[in-house]
Image (cartoon, rainbow, N blue to C red):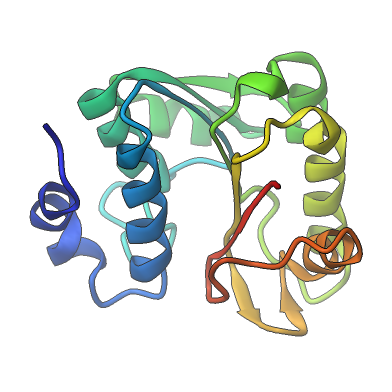
Length: 189
């Protein structure tokens, strides 16, 4: 049986000193504790091999989880180059080269998702990336199951990051983060 210690042994040398470490550990621990195969959907994907402190290599981490507990994984990215780079690094994840909002609306069954990781549209100084991430979540939120984890990457601080509008939208529904950090994590009630 897989444990969080297995995750630590595999990834601590790459991630322990990065901004994503605590959130990834929380997410992995939760997915392991489900004790069954999981369904993971990710927007944005790993791009540059071994770019642990930059891209974060989340696609590789989620692929490792699928290898250990089973299930399905889908990563969406608008760039053919990014999809090809990620596909070359994983075994269990499928890549879809599509705008993530469109893909979430048409390519997934939201009611089956255990974990939704939003990390598309590079962080901008404008409202473009926070707006895009809200559009992603809004496209599937009503159909996500209770207990689904939702995480947004690149949350630099409370006022700057991809999570800004997602955080405000969820807060209005009285859904507060389980973890606030560079990766912010919520659980759908």
